[in-house]
Length: 211
Image (cartoon, rainbow, N blue to C red; front, side, top):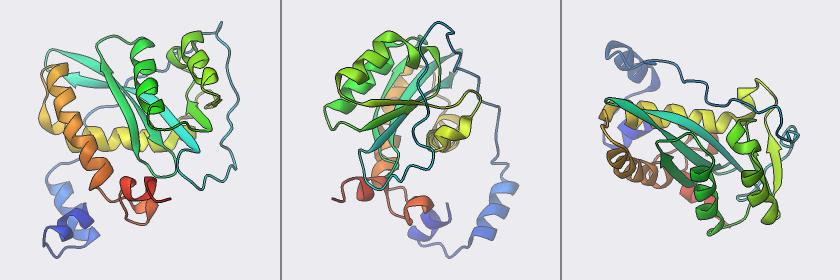
Protein backbone atom coordinates (compact mmCIF):
# COMPACT_ATOMS: atom_id res chain seq x y z
CA UNK A 1 0.00 0.00 0.00
CA UNK A 2 2.89 2.34 0.78
CA UNK A 3 4.37 1.73 -2.67
CA UNK A 4 0.99 2.28 -4.33
CA UNK A 5 0.51 5.60 -2.51
CA UNK A 6 4.02 6.79 -3.39
CA UNK A 7 3.43 5.87 -7.04
CA UNK A 8 0.46 8.25 -6.98
CA UNK A 9 2.55 11.12 -5.63
CA UNK A 10 1.85 10.82 -1.87
CA UNK A 11 4.92 11.12 0.36
CA UNK A 12 4.08 8.55 3.05
CA UNK A 13 5.85 5.82 4.96
CA UNK A 14 4.72 2.41 6.24
CA UNK A 15 3.95 3.74 9.75
CA UNK A 16 1.65 6.44 8.40
CA UNK A 17 -0.13 3.96 6.13
CA UNK A 18 -0.66 1.50 9.00
CA UNK A 19 -1.96 4.30 11.23
CA UNK A 20 -4.47 5.50 8.63
CA UNK A 21 -5.60 1.94 7.86
CA UNK A 22 -6.26 1.35 11.57
CA UNK A 23 -8.30 4.56 11.77
CA UNK A 24 -10.29 3.45 8.71
CA UNK A 25 -10.97 0.08 10.28
CA UNK A 26 -9.33 -1.88 7.47
CA UNK A 27 -9.00 -5.28 9.08
CA UNK A 28 -10.27 -8.82 8.66
CA UNK A 29 -14.06 -9.02 8.38
CA UNK A 30 -14.64 -12.75 8.90
CA UNK A 31 -12.62 -15.94 8.60
CA UNK A 32 -12.32 -18.17 5.60
CA UNK A 33 -14.58 -21.19 5.53
CA UNK A 34 -12.91 -24.58 5.49
CA UNK A 35 -13.39 -25.77 1.92
CA UNK A 36 -10.64 -28.40 1.86
CA UNK A 37 -12.46 -31.47 3.07
CA UNK A 38 -10.54 -34.70 2.32
CA UNK A 39 -11.89 -37.97 1.00
CA UNK A 40 -10.35 -40.93 2.83
CA UNK A 41 -10.76 -43.17 -0.20
CA UNK A 42 -8.78 -40.91 -2.54
CA UNK A 43 -5.04 -41.28 -3.02
CA UNK A 44 -2.92 -38.64 -1.28
CA UNK A 45 0.41 -37.47 -2.71
CA UNK A 46 3.52 -36.37 -0.76
CA UNK A 47 4.52 -32.74 -0.31
CA UNK A 48 7.42 -32.09 -2.71
CA UNK A 49 8.28 -28.46 -2.00
CA UNK A 50 10.00 -28.71 1.38
CA UNK A 51 13.58 -27.43 1.02
CA UNK A 52 13.11 -27.33 -2.76
CA UNK A 53 14.92 -24.42 -4.45
CA UNK A 54 12.34 -22.85 -6.76
CA UNK A 55 14.36 -20.51 -8.95
CA UNK A 56 12.39 -20.05 -12.17
CA UNK A 57 8.88 -19.61 -13.49
CA UNK A 58 6.74 -22.61 -14.47
CA UNK A 59 8.67 -24.85 -12.09
CA UNK A 60 5.91 -25.01 -9.47
CA UNK A 61 2.28 -24.00 -9.81
CA UNK A 62 -0.08 -24.01 -6.84
CA UNK A 63 -3.87 -24.07 -6.83
CA UNK A 64 -6.61 -23.60 -4.26
CA UNK A 65 -10.30 -22.78 -3.81
CA UNK A 66 -11.82 -19.97 -1.77
CA UNK A 67 -15.39 -18.83 -1.31
CA UNK A 68 -16.71 -15.53 -2.63
CA UNK A 69 -19.40 -13.80 -0.53
CA UNK A 70 -22.25 -12.42 -2.59
CA UNK A 71 -25.32 -10.46 -1.59
CA UNK A 72 -27.81 -13.26 -1.01
CA UNK A 73 -25.40 -16.14 -1.48
CA UNK A 74 -21.85 -17.11 -2.36
CA UNK A 75 -19.69 -18.67 -5.08
CA UNK A 76 -16.33 -20.37 -5.37
CA UNK A 77 -13.06 -19.21 -6.93
CA UNK A 78 -10.24 -21.52 -8.00
CA UNK A 79 -6.95 -19.92 -8.98
CA UNK A 80 -3.53 -21.14 -10.07
CA UNK A 81 -0.44 -19.15 -9.10
CA UNK A 82 3.14 -19.53 -10.28
CA UNK A 83 5.12 -20.10 -7.07
CA UNK A 84 8.28 -18.29 -8.21
CA UNK A 85 6.79 -15.13 -9.71
CA UNK A 86 3.39 -14.96 -7.93
CA UNK A 87 1.84 -14.64 -11.40
CA UNK A 88 -1.80 -15.73 -11.68
CA UNK A 89 -1.76 -18.36 -14.41
CA UNK A 90 -5.50 -19.03 -14.64
CA UNK A 91 -8.68 -18.89 -12.60
CA UNK A 92 -12.31 -19.97 -12.77
CA UNK A 93 -15.57 -19.39 -10.89
CA UNK A 94 -18.45 -21.70 -10.03
CA UNK A 95 -21.59 -21.81 -7.91
CA UNK A 96 -20.85 -25.47 -7.17
CA UNK A 97 -17.98 -26.83 -5.11
CA UNK A 98 -17.03 -29.54 -7.59
CA UNK A 99 -13.97 -30.61 -9.57
CA UNK A 100 -14.98 -29.58 -13.07
CA UNK A 101 -14.30 -25.85 -12.76
CA UNK A 102 -10.87 -26.59 -11.29
CA UNK A 103 -10.01 -28.75 -14.31
CA UNK A 104 -11.26 -25.99 -16.62
CA UNK A 105 -8.76 -23.59 -15.03
CA UNK A 106 -5.97 -26.19 -15.32
CA UNK A 107 -6.76 -26.61 -19.02
CA UNK A 108 -6.55 -22.84 -19.50
CA UNK A 109 -3.21 -22.76 -17.74
CA UNK A 110 -1.77 -25.61 -19.77
CA UNK A 111 -2.47 -23.66 -22.94
CA UNK A 112 0.18 -21.21 -21.72
CA UNK A 113 2.82 -23.51 -20.21
CA UNK A 114 3.37 -26.76 -18.31
CA UNK A 115 4.84 -26.74 -14.80
CA UNK A 116 7.06 -29.47 -13.44
CA UNK A 117 5.11 -29.65 -10.15
CA UNK A 118 1.53 -28.77 -9.23
CA UNK A 119 0.79 -28.26 -5.53
CA UNK A 120 -2.62 -28.26 -3.78
CA UNK A 121 -4.06 -29.20 -0.43
CA UNK A 122 -5.73 -32.57 0.17
CA UNK A 123 -9.25 -31.35 -0.63
CA UNK A 124 -11.57 -33.81 -2.34
CA UNK A 125 -11.54 -31.79 -5.57
CA UNK A 126 -7.76 -32.16 -5.89
CA UNK A 127 -7.47 -35.80 -4.84
CA UNK A 128 -10.23 -36.83 -7.26
CA UNK A 129 -9.22 -39.18 -10.05
CA UNK A 130 -10.29 -36.71 -12.75
CA UNK A 131 -8.08 -33.93 -11.38
CA UNK A 132 -4.96 -36.00 -10.71
CA UNK A 133 -5.36 -37.83 -14.02
CA UNK A 134 -5.36 -34.51 -15.90
CA UNK A 135 -2.07 -33.51 -14.27
CA UNK A 136 -0.46 -36.90 -14.81
CA UNK A 137 -1.48 -36.91 -18.48
CA UNK A 138 0.43 -33.65 -18.85
CA UNK A 139 3.53 -35.17 -17.21
CA UNK A 140 3.24 -33.01 -14.08
CA UNK A 141 4.40 -34.18 -10.65
CA UNK A 142 1.68 -33.88 -8.03
CA UNK A 143 2.42 -32.37 -4.62
CA UNK A 144 -0.04 -32.02 -1.74
CA UNK A 145 0.16 -30.08 1.52
CA UNK A 146 0.45 -32.01 4.74
CA UNK A 147 -2.85 -32.44 6.56
CA UNK A 148 -3.69 -29.28 8.51
CA UNK A 149 -0.68 -27.39 7.14
CA UNK A 150 -2.08 -24.29 5.44
CA UNK A 151 1.39 -22.69 5.31
CA UNK A 152 2.55 -25.37 2.86
CA UNK A 153 0.64 -23.36 0.24
CA UNK A 154 1.39 -19.97 1.75
CA UNK A 155 1.50 -17.96 -1.48
CA UNK A 156 -2.05 -18.95 -2.37
CA UNK A 157 -3.23 -18.01 1.13
CA UNK A 158 -1.63 -14.58 0.68
CA UNK A 159 -3.33 -14.26 -2.70
CA UNK A 160 -6.74 -14.89 -1.13
CA UNK A 161 -6.09 -12.20 1.45
CA UNK A 162 -5.20 -9.70 -1.28
CA UNK A 163 -8.15 -10.61 -3.50
CA UNK A 164 -10.68 -10.27 -0.69
CA UNK A 165 -9.32 -7.16 1.03
CA UNK A 166 -8.50 -5.28 -2.16
CA UNK A 167 -11.49 -6.26 -4.28
CA UNK A 168 -14.21 -8.62 -3.02
CA UNK A 169 -14.99 -6.99 0.33
CA UNK A 170 -14.89 -3.51 -1.17
CA UNK A 171 -17.17 -4.17 -4.14
CA UNK A 172 -20.09 -6.08 -2.62
CA UNK A 173 -20.76 -8.16 -5.72
CA UNK A 174 -24.28 -9.48 -6.19
CA UNK A 175 -23.74 -12.20 -8.81
CA UNK A 176 -21.07 -14.44 -10.29
CA UNK A 177 -21.31 -12.44 -13.49
CA UNK A 178 -20.30 -9.29 -11.61
CA UNK A 179 -17.53 -11.19 -9.81
CA UNK A 180 -16.18 -12.52 -13.12
CA UNK A 181 -15.99 -9.04 -14.61
CA UNK A 182 -14.52 -7.55 -11.45
CA UNK A 183 -11.91 -10.23 -10.92
CA UNK A 184 -10.90 -10.01 -14.56
CA UNK A 185 -9.90 -6.42 -13.91
CA UNK A 186 -8.37 -7.18 -10.51
CA UNK A 187 -6.18 -10.06 -11.67
CA UNK A 188 -4.91 -7.95 -14.55
CA UNK A 189 -3.95 -5.30 -11.98
CA UNK A 190 -2.46 -7.95 -9.68
CA UNK A 191 -0.28 -9.41 -12.43
CA UNK A 192 0.68 -6.27 -14.30
CA UNK A 193 0.75 -3.38 -11.83
CA UNK A 194 0.80 -4.51 -8.19
CA UNK A 195 4.37 -4.71 -6.75
CA UNK A 196 5.23 -7.51 -4.30
CA UNK A 197 7.80 -7.25 -1.55
CA UNK A 198 8.65 -10.95 -1.89
CA UNK A 199 9.87 -10.42 -5.45
CA UNK A 200 11.87 -7.24 -4.81
CA UNK A 201 8.89 -4.92 -5.32
CA UNK A 202 8.46 -5.97 -8.92
CA UNK A 203 5.20 -7.11 -10.46
CA UNK A 204 4.41 -10.80 -11.06
CA UNK A 205 4.34 -10.22 -14.82
CA UNK A 206 7.81 -8.69 -14.79
CA UNK A 207 9.22 -11.73 -13.00
CA UNK A 208 7.17 -14.38 -14.80
CA UNK A 209 8.11 -13.24 -18.31
CA UNK A 210 11.76 -12.57 -17.45
CA UNK A 211 13.64 -15.36 -19.21
